[in-house]
Length: 637
Image (cartoon, rainbow, N blue to C red; front, side, top):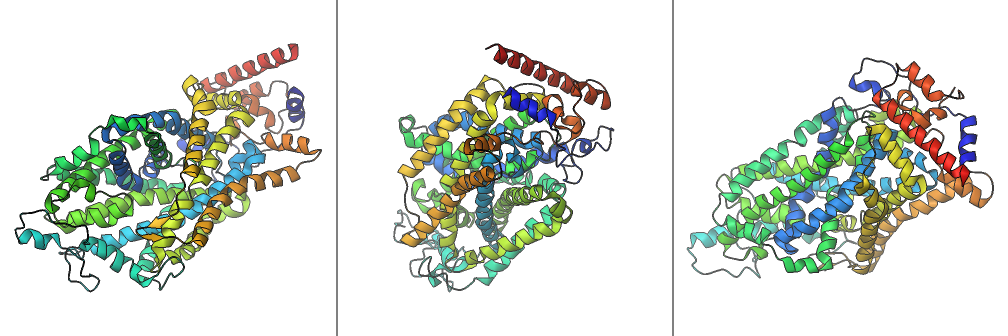
C-alpha cells in the first residue's frame, strides 16, 4: 500500500473538476464550483432535505403502520431503527456528497469498480419519478375539484355512481338510530375515485390499459411543467421554492390537527392510533415494519441526499443538519398521525362503525377516506382544498429531489457538454419521463402505478444501500472515511457512527432484504390479482438495478491493465482526482494529487498560498501526522 501511494505521489494528475479560487471575500459561493452551481443560502440545503424527507409517506403510510403494529408501542422499534439505520446512513450519504461535490454517478471515483451502484440508483430514481409525478397529478385533479361549493364526491346519484353507493348524509337525515352495515356498500368518494377519476371500469386489467384519460393527462402535463420550472436553474431555483413548499405544509398540518382534535369522536381515532400494545414488540414483523418505514421515509439510497449535499460549502455542518432532518421527519410523522386519526375517529362516529373499518393506508387514505371525511365537515371544500394543497407541496419537494438527482448525476459525468445546457437537458429529461408516464393516465393506469410502486424501489434499493455501506467501510476503508469527515467538519465520527456503519446498519438492511424475499407476495389492487407476466416484469425492474453493479464492475476492470487481480485492485482504489472539488479545500493527503505538488511539503506550500494556517488546516496536519505514524508502524512490522 505504501508503494502504491508513493507511485501516486510521483504522478500528479490535474483533477477534472478543479476550479481556481475566484474570490477570498468569504461569501457562501466562494467555496463551490461556479460552473456547477450551489445553494444561494445555508437554509436552502436544510429546507430541501426536510422537504425531500417529509413527503406523502408521512401522511398516508406512517399513521396506518403505527396503528396496525402496536399503536404507541410501535414508536419503540421506530426510534431504535431510526438510530441504527436512519441517522447513520443519512449522515454517510451527506458526507460523501459534500466531501466530493459530486453527484450519484461521479461520486464513485471513490471506487470506480462499484460505479454500477450509481447507475442502479439512477435507474431506480427514474422509475420512481415516473409514477410519483402521477400521484401529484391525482392531487392536482382533486385540488381543482375542490374549487366548488359542493364537493363532487359528496353525494350519490351521479352518472358514475352504482346501486351500491351509500350516502352517509341521507342516513343521517333519516335519523337512523342503529348502526348501518356498510360491508356491501360503497361510499360516494370511493366511486368518484375509481369510476370517475380513474375510470377503471374501462379496463379489464394491466394488459388492457384502455383509453387515455385526457383530464388526467393534462394534470400530469401540468405537474411536469411545475417541476421543470422549479428546477430550471438547478438548486438556485429549487432552493428558493422550498422556502414555501417545505414550510407551508406544516401550517396546513397544524390547521388540520387543530380542526381534527376539536371534532366530536376524535378521541376514538387517537385512541386507536396510539393505544400501546406491547405484546406486538415480540413479533419480528413489527421491527421489520419500523425499519422499512425509516428506510423509505428518509429517502436513503435514492441519491437525493447525496445530490443536495454536493452543492454545499465544504465545511457545512451536516452533522447538525442530520439530526435536525431525521428527528424532524419522525416528529412530523407522529403529528400527521394525530391529524389523520382524529378525523377518522370523527368519521367512525358519524358512520357508526369502528375506526378499523375506515382506516386505510396508501392512496386509499388520500383519495377515498380523507376526502369522504371532508364532506362531513362544515366548509368542506375549504378543508378539502387545504388537504390536497398540503399533499401537493409535500409531493413536489420529493419530486424536485428525484429530478435534481438525475440531472446532476448525468451532468457531472459530462460537465463540459451538459453543464452549459443544463436547462435544456432538464427539459429533455422531463419530456421523456412525461411520455413514459402516459400509460399511467389510461383507464388501466392504476395497475401500472401499483406495479411500479411495488417493484421499482424494492429489493433493488436495499442492495444499492447495502453495497454503498460496505464499499465505504470495507473497500475505501473506515479509517480513511473518518479522516475525510474529520478534515471536512473538524472532528471524527464517534464510536456510535462507526459501529453502525461497520456492523449494525448493514446487518439490519440484510435482514430487511432477506425478509422481503421470504415474505414475497404477488402484487394486487383490491380484488385484482396481477398476471404472471406482470409479476415477472416487476421482478425484472428490481433485478435490473442490481445487475448494474456487476455490469459496472466488468466495464471498470476492462479499462485497467495487468492481470485480472491487478485490474480489480486498481479499479477498487480511488481515482487520483478523488477528494474535495476546490483546490483550497484539498489539504492534507489530498494536496499530493494536485498539479505541482511534487514539493516535499506540499501542505505548507498550499497553506502559504491560501493565507496561513486555519483550524481546518490544523486538522489536515493532524491527519497527515496520523498517517505517517501508521506507515512507520507498518514498516516496523
